[in-house]
Amino acid sequence: MSTRARRLVSRLGMAGWLFAVWLLLWGRADPLIVAGGAVVVLAVYLVSRLPAVPTIKRIRPLWLAVALAEFAWDLLVSSLVIARHALYRPRAVRGAIVEVNARTRSELILLAVTTSISLRPGTLLVDLDWDRHLLRIHAMPAGSRKEADAARKGVLRTEHRLMRALRTSEDAAEEDVSTREDR
Image (cartoon, one colour):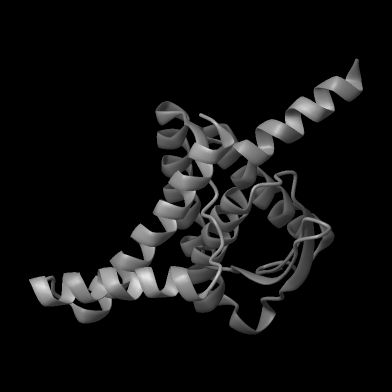
């Protein structure tokens, strides 16, 4: 797909997203609301310069299924850990701010990673330094260095799963550059 076609698809993706949000806000889709949504999306595009939605170069369905299954498992395990601490030792639970260096250069993958870790009980995104690709998360329980390292490794595993399942243009370009540098 050419750069121009990719940009057009990306812009149409953002327009589709805005239109979907418009319909969700109204809660129904009668002809007047649909027409009004189309006019609003068009007006927003004419008045402002909206960002392009990052495009996915390739989806690997098997790896995506594995990533979703592992995410469900992470939800279950983290819920049980937090429940155990809440019921048996609520005052003894300690948290920590953990820095994680992200490998991905894709905004889409980074968004999926931050959403994933924020949905899990016990972890929450505190800060994202996009220029340095650095995530700061609050992890709980993290009373020791070992638990903080386990939280960091959990975030990196999530990122790896998503990078394996969703191939983006940014990460593909990064791999191409690093492959050329290795030669």
